[in-house]
Amino acid sequence: MAWNKYIRPLLVLAALLVAVPACKISYSLNGSALDYTVYKTIRVAQFPIRAALVYPPLQQTFENELLDYISRNTRLQTTDGAADLELEGEITTYNLTPQAVTENAFASQTRLTIGVRVKYINNKDDKKSIDQTFSAYRDFDATLMLTDVQDQLCEEISEELVNLIFNATLGDW
Image (cartoon, rainbow, N blue to C red):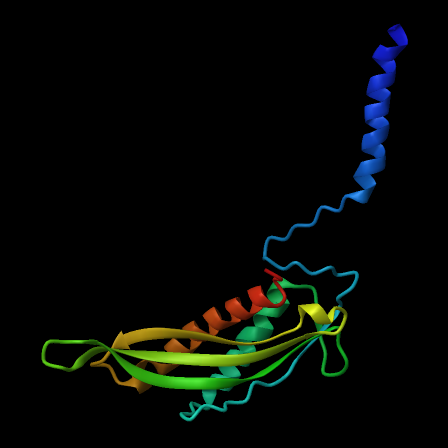
């Protein structure tokens, strides 16, 4: 029975040594769940504005925010050719709606809404590809002219949209 005292710990140690190499611990501080041994490149296409109301600087603002976010939060190389992952789409919504109507039937707030249709193509695992529309908005005081707040609102909304898109695609939530 004395040998039993030594055999059990050795069996437990042997089981751990066999099990541990099979485990893969993966974490990321930025939310990206990519396996960089599989995914190395991404192609980000232009996102043309297809909305009824057009604010031309929005396309560049959105595209720059998207590319910057990807480069800051992943190790993927952007390319114009064939890639492991692809992001393409269009800006489909850019509209203003009155909000918070006051007692004299005037709106005290106006809402700017931006919507983006995104087609995410995972060329390594088609089941992870998506075609989805994302939207975000900001309210501003109706006494302000849109031209006075438009650039700031477009930047804020673009940041939120990029975060939503990243989490649904590269973040693999």
